[in-house]
Length: 497
Image 1 (cartoon, rainbow, N blue to C red):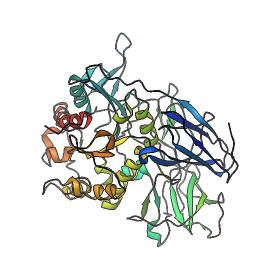
Image 2: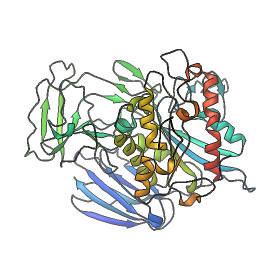
Image 3: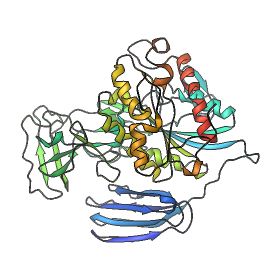
Image 4: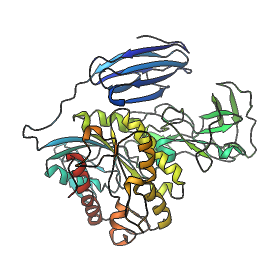
């Protein structure tokens, strides 16, 4: 296992399909930038640090892909190839039954539910009040309380001969901009990104099985990027037999939204962030009301990135602050691990309108665009949409978000060809998949008609007791089945009916 001392670099070229490489960064300063360029324009990069002893796998990669390893801190090591994983495609001899993998990024509606095993020990998964026992349902690591409207859609597609292997990385209340992609707080550079009396998330390692740990929050001060390396503990994913206590409550597998401690806060008066600070220099930031101590900021980069909008910059896929909770990594790894042909891998990106309502269209567009970029690096195509209207939000917020994806709000017909997201993706030489027209191998992203467009603003009869924005069982079936024609046309690559 070769070890590189910063700033050394090395390269490796894959010799067979579906190879992966492995990077180990167990030292406090270890950091490796891995980039790859393969055939058919496939490329990507990832920054790796704070791994367990087994390291982090990157792949699978296409044959004849050139992988470059650059040590940008400490003395990380790598293995190439880590493994070559042939995929057994589940496709029937008659060609009518197909298998696809679909991951989910979104909030509580597409989240999913899990029940206790039945009397014979078989796992039961729930769509609201109707328990079922087949594999067309969301991952048990996403035990939502209300079920997923995608369950009836996936079941119907299964009846039609489309076997969908679902991997679920949705979670209640999350933001695609802030939680899934990640941001750096810049505050337009006027007073820096630091904020008083704020409970900042701190960097931490794993607490148990299924929990990857998380990055701290990032701010820009004095021409330096600072990460809260000591701060509040959050919890997004856990699949452990041993309880883990966060925010005063024990957790095993029942995490339905990000659990957030608030015991550490920044001070009332801003500490000094030196303009001559070097990487790894620290600043202590003790809030008067902190019960668990204050915040420790660590300089992680000397840079001055510009804000995209609203005083923040959405993380690019190679940035230190990309994917702070591991949503994207978890989803992509789960999708590529399914037993389906490589061309049949998709990630359904369901716009998190409730959390991101009021955000600029630039931030919304970037969150979808960068998610596509990250997924596409491993050959996963993205399907973009938005969720059901929540009466507690305004139609103006939903129309603004919808315009990014479909080119207009409810007051006009959709124009996917000229939407803000399409213009950005096409400008990056990506191809919008039009089922029945675009060959599957050529497509990089798709759209499906959103639940907001399907059902508009008059959805009260479909929802549970207000202010609960989740559908009734009957409403969920209507929502799920409304998505079937579009998903069918994408998976079979036939014109919509």
